[in-house]
Length: 397
Image 1 (spheres, rainbow, N blue to C red):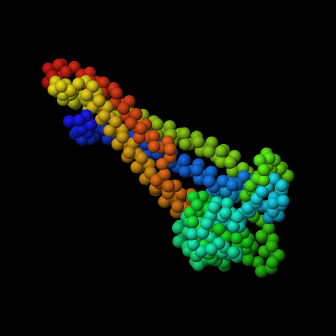
Image 2: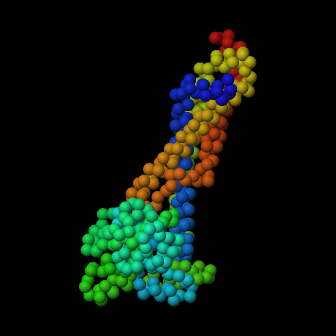
Image 3: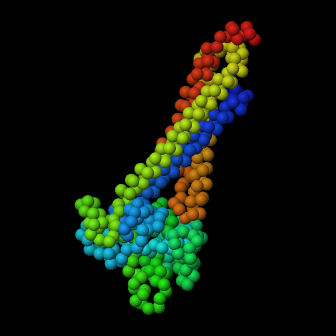
Protein backbone atom coordinates (compact mmCIF):
# COMPACT_ATOMS: atom_id res chain seq x y z
CA UNK A 1 0.00 0.00 0.00
CA UNK A 2 1.29 3.48 -0.85
CA UNK A 3 1.86 6.14 1.82
CA UNK A 4 -1.13 8.12 0.53
CA UNK A 5 -3.33 5.03 0.61
CA UNK A 6 -2.18 4.29 4.14
CA UNK A 7 -2.95 7.82 5.30
CA UNK A 8 -6.41 7.81 3.67
CA UNK A 9 -7.17 4.40 5.20
CA UNK A 10 -6.37 5.73 8.67
CA UNK A 11 -8.55 8.80 8.10
CA UNK A 12 -11.49 6.67 6.95
CA UNK A 13 -11.07 4.41 9.97
CA UNK A 14 -11.23 7.35 12.42
CA UNK A 15 -13.21 10.14 10.68
CA UNK A 16 -14.29 11.87 13.90
CA UNK A 17 -10.74 12.72 14.97
CA UNK A 18 -9.79 15.10 12.12
CA UNK A 19 -13.27 16.57 11.68
CA UNK A 20 -12.71 19.50 14.06
CA UNK A 21 -9.44 20.43 12.34
CA UNK A 22 -11.11 20.30 8.91
CA UNK A 23 -14.00 22.46 10.15
CA UNK A 24 -11.76 25.11 11.75
CA UNK A 25 -9.49 25.21 8.70
CA UNK A 26 -12.52 25.59 6.44
CA UNK A 27 -13.88 28.47 8.51
CA UNK A 28 -10.52 30.26 8.51
CA UNK A 29 -10.03 29.83 4.77
CA UNK A 30 -13.66 30.81 4.05
CA UNK A 31 -13.30 34.05 6.00
CA UNK A 32 -10.01 34.93 4.31
CA UNK A 33 -11.31 33.88 0.89
CA UNK A 34 -14.47 36.00 1.08
CA UNK A 35 -12.54 38.92 2.57
CA UNK A 36 -9.82 38.92 -0.10
CA UNK A 37 -12.23 38.49 -3.01
CA UNK A 38 -14.63 41.17 -1.77
CA UNK A 39 -11.84 43.66 -0.98
CA UNK A 40 -10.20 43.09 -4.37
CA UNK A 41 -13.48 43.60 -6.24
CA UNK A 42 -14.38 46.63 -4.10
CA UNK A 43 -11.07 48.36 -4.77
CA UNK A 44 -11.16 47.57 -8.49
CA UNK A 45 -14.72 48.91 -8.76
CA UNK A 46 -13.86 52.08 -6.83
CA UNK A 47 -11.02 52.75 -9.28
CA UNK A 48 -13.17 52.05 -12.36
CA UNK A 49 -16.07 54.21 -11.18
CA UNK A 50 -13.80 57.18 -10.47
CA UNK A 51 -11.80 56.88 -13.69
CA UNK A 52 -11.91 60.13 -15.66
CA UNK A 53 -13.27 62.14 -12.70
CA UNK A 54 -10.68 64.43 -11.14
CA UNK A 55 -12.96 66.47 -8.91
CA UNK A 56 -16.52 66.42 -7.56
CA UNK A 57 -18.14 69.78 -6.83
CA UNK A 58 -21.27 70.12 -4.73
CA UNK A 59 -22.79 71.66 -1.64
CA UNK A 60 -20.76 72.32 1.50
CA UNK A 61 -20.60 69.38 3.86
CA UNK A 62 -18.65 66.15 4.14
CA UNK A 63 -16.21 65.65 1.23
CA UNK A 64 -16.47 61.87 1.57
CA UNK A 65 -20.27 62.06 1.48
CA UNK A 66 -20.05 64.21 -1.64
CA UNK A 67 -17.87 61.64 -3.41
CA UNK A 68 -19.93 58.65 -2.28
CA UNK A 69 -23.13 60.30 -3.51
CA UNK A 70 -21.85 61.94 -6.70
CA UNK A 71 -19.49 59.27 -8.01
CA UNK A 72 -20.56 55.96 -6.47
CA UNK A 73 -24.23 56.72 -5.70
CA UNK A 74 -23.94 55.07 -2.29
CA UNK A 75 -24.99 57.99 -0.10
CA UNK A 76 -27.27 61.01 0.06
CA UNK A 77 -25.75 64.26 -1.25
CA UNK A 78 -25.13 67.13 1.21
CA UNK A 79 -27.53 69.28 -0.84
CA UNK A 80 -27.99 70.98 -4.19
CA UNK A 81 -25.99 73.75 -5.80
CA UNK A 82 -27.08 76.61 -8.08
CA UNK A 83 -26.99 75.73 -11.74
CA UNK A 84 -25.27 79.02 -12.56
CA UNK A 85 -22.40 78.09 -10.23
CA UNK A 86 -21.94 74.75 -11.94
CA UNK A 87 -22.10 76.35 -15.38
CA UNK A 88 -19.53 78.96 -14.35
CA UNK A 89 -16.99 76.17 -13.87
CA UNK A 90 -17.02 75.58 -17.62
CA UNK A 91 -15.42 78.98 -18.12
CA UNK A 92 -12.56 78.24 -15.74
CA UNK A 93 -9.31 77.73 -17.69
CA UNK A 94 -8.30 74.94 -15.27
CA UNK A 95 -11.37 72.86 -16.17
CA UNK A 96 -11.50 70.69 -19.29
CA UNK A 97 -14.98 69.23 -18.84
CA UNK A 98 -17.99 69.60 -16.54
CA UNK A 99 -20.78 67.00 -16.23
CA UNK A 100 -23.68 68.18 -14.02
CA UNK A 101 -25.84 65.53 -12.32
CA UNK A 102 -29.27 65.91 -10.72
CA UNK A 103 -30.35 63.30 -8.16
CA UNK A 104 -33.34 62.74 -5.92
CA UNK A 105 -35.54 59.81 -7.03
CA UNK A 106 -35.37 56.06 -7.48
CA UNK A 107 -37.31 53.16 -8.94
CA UNK A 108 -37.23 49.90 -6.96
CA UNK A 109 -34.00 50.93 -5.29
CA UNK A 110 -32.23 51.94 -8.52
CA UNK A 111 -31.32 55.61 -8.54
CA UNK A 112 -32.67 57.92 -11.21
CA UNK A 113 -29.87 60.22 -12.33
CA UNK A 114 -30.40 63.31 -14.47
CA UNK A 115 -27.39 63.60 -16.77
CA UNK A 116 -26.39 64.38 -20.33
CA UNK A 117 -25.07 61.81 -22.78
CA UNK A 118 -21.50 62.76 -21.79
CA UNK A 119 -22.04 60.90 -18.51
CA UNK A 120 -22.77 57.68 -20.40
CA UNK A 121 -19.72 58.25 -22.61
CA UNK A 122 -17.57 58.77 -19.50
CA UNK A 123 -17.95 55.05 -18.66
CA UNK A 124 -17.89 53.80 -22.23
CA UNK A 125 -21.62 53.04 -22.18
CA UNK A 126 -23.23 51.67 -25.33
CA UNK A 127 -26.73 50.55 -26.13
CA UNK A 128 -27.75 46.90 -25.93
CA UNK A 129 -31.24 47.70 -27.23
CA UNK A 130 -33.38 50.74 -28.01
CA UNK A 131 -32.10 54.31 -28.22
CA UNK A 132 -30.73 57.02 -25.95
CA UNK A 133 -33.13 59.53 -24.41
CA UNK A 134 -33.79 62.72 -26.34
CA UNK A 135 -36.61 64.41 -24.46
CA UNK A 136 -37.46 64.98 -20.78
CA UNK A 137 -39.21 62.02 -19.06
CA UNK A 138 -37.41 59.52 -21.27
CA UNK A 139 -34.99 57.11 -19.59
CA UNK A 140 -32.22 54.63 -20.33
CA UNK A 141 -31.48 51.78 -17.91
CA UNK A 142 -28.12 50.32 -16.96
CA UNK A 143 -27.71 46.56 -17.36
CA UNK A 144 -28.23 45.69 -13.67
CA UNK A 145 -31.10 48.16 -13.32
CA UNK A 146 -32.86 46.60 -16.32
CA UNK A 147 -32.35 43.11 -14.93
CA UNK A 148 -33.54 44.12 -11.45
CA UNK A 149 -36.66 45.98 -12.61
CA UNK A 150 -37.58 43.92 -15.66
CA UNK A 151 -38.12 47.09 -17.71
CA UNK A 152 -37.56 47.15 -21.47
CA UNK A 153 -37.81 49.83 -24.19
CA UNK A 154 -41.40 51.02 -24.50
CA UNK A 155 -42.28 50.36 -20.83
CA UNK A 156 -43.30 53.16 -18.49
CA UNK A 157 -42.64 53.55 -14.76
CA UNK A 158 -43.17 56.02 -11.91
CA UNK A 159 -40.23 57.27 -9.89
CA UNK A 160 -40.34 57.47 -6.09
CA UNK A 161 -38.92 60.31 -4.00
CA UNK A 162 -35.66 59.61 -2.20
CA UNK A 163 -32.69 57.40 -3.00
CA UNK A 164 -34.08 54.16 -1.57
CA UNK A 165 -37.29 52.19 -1.75
CA UNK A 166 -40.29 53.36 0.27
CA UNK A 167 -40.46 57.01 -0.78
CA UNK A 168 -43.47 58.91 -2.10
CA UNK A 169 -44.31 57.76 -5.64
CA UNK A 170 -44.69 60.48 -8.27
CA UNK A 171 -47.92 59.14 -9.75
CA UNK A 172 -48.63 62.30 -11.75
CA UNK A 173 -45.85 61.70 -14.28
CA UNK A 174 -44.17 58.60 -15.67
CA UNK A 175 -40.91 57.90 -17.44
CA UNK A 176 -40.75 56.08 -20.77
CA UNK A 177 -37.89 53.63 -21.25
CA UNK A 178 -36.16 54.25 -24.58
CA UNK A 179 -33.14 51.97 -24.21
CA UNK A 180 -31.04 49.57 -22.16
CA UNK A 181 -27.25 49.82 -21.89
CA UNK A 182 -24.84 46.92 -22.26
CA UNK A 183 -22.93 45.92 -19.10
CA UNK A 184 -19.91 48.14 -18.38
CA UNK A 185 -18.75 46.81 -15.00
CA UNK A 186 -19.13 50.33 -13.57
CA UNK A 187 -21.63 52.32 -11.53
CA UNK A 188 -23.52 52.97 -14.78
CA UNK A 189 -24.95 49.44 -14.65
CA UNK A 190 -26.99 50.20 -11.51
CA UNK A 191 -28.51 53.51 -12.60
CA UNK A 192 -31.56 54.77 -14.45
CA UNK A 193 -30.50 57.74 -16.59
CA UNK A 194 -32.66 60.57 -17.85
CA UNK A 195 -32.16 64.18 -19.00
CA UNK A 196 -31.48 66.64 -16.17
CA UNK A 197 -34.70 68.43 -17.18
CA UNK A 198 -36.70 65.36 -16.08
CA UNK A 199 -35.47 65.69 -12.49
CA UNK A 200 -36.13 69.43 -12.51
CA UNK A 201 -39.66 68.86 -13.74
CA UNK A 202 -40.44 66.13 -11.20
CA UNK A 203 -39.39 68.41 -8.34
CA UNK A 204 -40.90 71.66 -9.65
CA UNK A 205 -44.11 71.12 -7.71
CA UNK A 206 -45.80 70.70 -11.11
CA UNK A 207 -46.58 74.42 -11.21
CA UNK A 208 -48.30 75.63 -14.30
CA UNK A 209 -46.35 78.87 -14.64
CA UNK A 210 -42.95 78.85 -16.32
CA UNK A 211 -41.41 81.07 -13.64
CA UNK A 212 -41.76 78.38 -10.94
CA UNK A 213 -40.41 75.76 -13.32
CA UNK A 214 -37.42 77.92 -14.18
CA UNK A 215 -36.67 78.50 -10.50
CA UNK A 216 -36.57 74.78 -9.84
CA UNK A 217 -34.28 73.99 -12.76
CA UNK A 218 -31.56 76.26 -11.50
CA UNK A 219 -30.15 73.60 -9.19
CA UNK A 220 -28.15 70.42 -9.73
CA UNK A 221 -26.74 68.02 -7.17
CA UNK A 222 -23.10 67.71 -8.19
CA UNK A 223 -20.77 68.56 -11.06
CA UNK A 224 -18.09 66.07 -12.12
CA UNK A 225 -14.92 67.80 -13.34
CA UNK A 226 -11.90 66.80 -15.40
CA UNK A 227 -8.74 68.90 -15.10
CA UNK A 228 -7.39 70.81 -18.09
CA UNK A 229 -3.78 70.49 -16.90
CA UNK A 230 -1.74 68.98 -14.03
CA UNK A 231 -1.43 72.38 -12.36
CA UNK A 232 -5.19 72.31 -11.72
CA UNK A 233 -4.64 69.55 -9.15
CA UNK A 234 -3.02 72.03 -6.78
CA UNK A 235 -4.97 75.19 -7.66
CA UNK A 236 -8.57 74.32 -8.51
CA UNK A 237 -9.80 72.57 -5.30
CA UNK A 238 -8.45 75.39 -3.10
CA UNK A 239 -9.90 78.00 -5.45
CA UNK A 240 -13.38 76.45 -5.35
CA UNK A 241 -13.41 75.79 -1.60
CA UNK A 242 -12.26 79.27 -0.61
CA UNK A 243 -13.92 81.53 -3.16
CA UNK A 244 -17.46 80.18 -3.62
CA UNK A 245 -20.44 78.56 -1.91
CA UNK A 246 -19.34 75.25 -3.44
CA UNK A 247 -17.23 72.43 -2.11
CA UNK A 248 -14.68 70.46 -4.12
CA UNK A 249 -13.64 66.91 -3.23
CA UNK A 250 -11.09 64.63 -4.87
CA UNK A 251 -12.38 61.05 -5.41
CA UNK A 252 -8.83 59.66 -5.27
CA UNK A 253 -8.06 61.36 -1.95
CA UNK A 254 -11.39 60.53 -0.31
CA UNK A 255 -11.23 56.89 -1.43
CA UNK A 256 -7.72 56.61 0.01
CA UNK A 257 -9.10 57.87 3.33
CA UNK A 258 -12.02 55.45 3.16
CA UNK A 259 -9.74 52.48 2.42
CA UNK A 260 -7.61 53.45 5.41
CA UNK A 261 -10.70 53.39 7.62
CA UNK A 262 -11.90 50.09 6.19
CA UNK A 263 -8.40 48.65 6.49
CA UNK A 264 -8.70 48.46 10.28
CA UNK A 265 -11.81 46.28 10.04
CA UNK A 266 -10.25 44.18 7.29
CA UNK A 267 -7.14 43.61 9.41
CA UNK A 268 -9.29 42.60 12.39
CA UNK A 269 -11.11 39.98 10.30
CA UNK A 270 -7.81 38.72 8.90
CA UNK A 271 -6.47 38.39 12.45
CA UNK A 272 -9.57 36.40 13.41
CA UNK A 273 -9.02 34.10 10.43
CA UNK A 274 -5.39 33.66 11.46
CA UNK A 275 -6.48 32.75 14.99
CA UNK A 276 -8.90 30.18 13.59
CA UNK A 277 -6.10 28.72 11.48
CA UNK A 278 -3.83 28.46 14.53
CA UNK A 279 -6.64 26.81 16.47
CA UNK A 280 -7.13 24.39 13.58
CA UNK A 281 -3.43 23.54 13.71
CA UNK A 282 -3.58 22.92 17.45
CA UNK A 283 -6.67 20.75 17.02
CA UNK A 284 -4.94 18.81 14.24
CA UNK A 285 -1.82 18.21 16.33
CA UNK A 286 -3.89 17.13 19.32
CA UNK A 287 -6.08 14.87 17.21
CA UNK A 288 -3.16 13.16 15.49
CA UNK A 289 -1.35 12.66 18.80
CA UNK A 290 -4.48 11.11 20.33
CA UNK A 291 -4.92 8.90 17.28
CA UNK A 292 -1.32 7.69 17.45
CA UNK A 293 -1.84 6.67 21.08
CA UNK A 294 -4.44 4.14 19.90
CA UNK A 295 -2.29 2.99 16.98
CA UNK A 296 1.03 2.42 18.79
CA UNK A 297 0.81 -1.37 18.54
CA UNK A 298 -0.20 -1.18 14.84
CA UNK A 299 2.76 1.07 14.07
CA UNK A 300 5.12 -1.22 15.96
CA UNK A 301 3.94 -4.18 13.89
CA UNK A 302 4.54 -2.18 10.71
CA UNK A 303 8.10 -1.51 11.87
CA UNK A 304 8.56 -5.25 12.50
CA UNK A 305 7.34 -5.97 8.97
CA UNK A 306 9.97 -3.69 7.47
CA UNK A 307 8.51 -0.19 7.46
CA UNK A 308 11.20 2.42 8.14
CA UNK A 309 11.02 5.34 10.57
CA UNK A 310 10.88 7.66 7.54
CA UNK A 311 7.86 5.76 6.21
CA UNK A 312 5.92 6.25 9.45
CA UNK A 313 7.00 9.89 9.67
CA UNK A 314 5.87 10.55 6.09
CA UNK A 315 2.59 8.67 6.62
CA UNK A 316 1.55 10.96 9.48
CA UNK A 317 2.59 14.10 7.58
CA UNK A 318 0.58 13.01 4.54
CA UNK A 319 -2.41 12.44 6.83
CA UNK A 320 -1.99 15.98 8.22
CA UNK A 321 -1.64 17.41 4.70
CA UNK A 322 -4.81 15.65 3.55
CA UNK A 323 -6.74 17.18 6.46
CA UNK A 324 -5.35 20.66 5.70
CA UNK A 325 -6.14 20.47 1.98
CA UNK A 326 -9.65 19.15 2.65
CA UNK A 327 -10.29 22.09 4.96
CA UNK A 328 -8.81 24.56 2.47
CA UNK A 329 -10.92 23.33 -0.46
CA UNK A 330 -14.05 23.28 1.70
CA UNK A 331 -13.20 26.81 2.89
CA UNK A 332 -12.83 28.16 -0.64
CA UNK A 333 -16.19 26.69 -1.60
CA UNK A 334 -17.80 28.07 1.57
CA UNK A 335 -16.28 31.53 1.10
CA UNK A 336 -17.56 31.86 -2.47
CA UNK A 337 -20.95 30.45 -1.49
CA UNK A 338 -21.14 33.35 0.98
CA UNK A 339 -20.25 35.78 -1.82
CA UNK A 340 -23.02 34.27 -3.94
CA UNK A 341 -25.56 34.90 -1.16
CA UNK A 342 -24.15 38.41 -0.63
CA UNK A 343 -24.42 39.09 -4.35
CA UNK A 344 -28.13 38.17 -4.36
CA UNK A 345 -28.81 40.47 -1.39
CA UNK A 346 -26.88 43.39 -2.91
CA UNK A 347 -28.66 42.98 -6.25
CA UNK A 348 -32.07 43.05 -4.57
CA UNK A 349 -31.08 46.28 -2.77
CA UNK A 350 -29.81 47.96 -5.96
CA UNK A 351 -26.25 48.07 -4.62
CA UNK A 352 -22.97 47.18 -6.38
CA UNK A 353 -22.84 43.41 -6.84
CA UNK A 354 -19.85 41.12 -6.34
CA UNK A 355 -18.87 38.21 -8.55
CA UNK A 356 -18.98 34.93 -6.63
CA UNK A 357 -16.55 33.40 -9.13
CA UNK A 358 -13.89 36.11 -8.73
CA UNK A 359 -10.63 34.95 -7.14
CA UNK A 360 -8.27 37.60 -5.77
CA UNK A 361 -4.56 37.08 -6.53
CA UNK A 362 -3.58 36.35 -2.91
CA UNK A 363 -6.61 34.12 -2.45
CA UNK A 364 -5.06 31.40 -4.60
CA UNK A 365 -2.28 31.04 -2.01
CA UNK A 366 -4.71 30.02 0.75
CA UNK A 367 -4.54 26.24 0.03
CA UNK A 368 -0.73 26.46 0.25
CA UNK A 369 -1.03 28.37 3.55
CA UNK A 370 -3.42 25.77 4.96
CA UNK A 371 -1.12 22.98 3.75
CA UNK A 372 1.89 24.58 5.44
CA UNK A 373 -0.04 25.05 8.70
CA UNK A 374 -1.19 21.41 8.69
CA UNK A 375 2.34 20.12 7.97
CA UNK A 376 3.74 22.17 10.84
CA UNK A 377 0.98 20.86 13.10
CA UNK A 378 1.80 17.28 12.05
CA UNK A 379 5.56 17.45 12.75
CA UNK A 380 5.35 16.53 16.45
CA UNK A 381 2.92 13.60 16.02
CA UNK A 382 4.98 12.37 13.04
CA UNK A 383 8.19 12.47 15.08
CA UNK A 384 6.46 10.59 17.91
CA UNK A 385 5.28 7.93 15.45
CA UNK A 386 8.77 7.48 14.04
CA UNK A 387 10.50 7.31 17.45
CA UNK A 388 8.30 4.69 19.13
CA UNK A 389 10.15 1.96 21.07
CA UNK A 390 9.06 -1.06 18.99
CA UNK A 391 10.40 -3.73 21.34
CA UNK A 392 8.76 -2.25 24.44
CA UNK A 393 5.40 -1.82 22.72
CA UNK A 394 5.36 -5.37 21.36
CA UNK A 395 6.42 -6.78 24.71
CA UNK A 396 3.47 -5.10 26.44
CA UNK A 397 1.17 -6.32 23.68
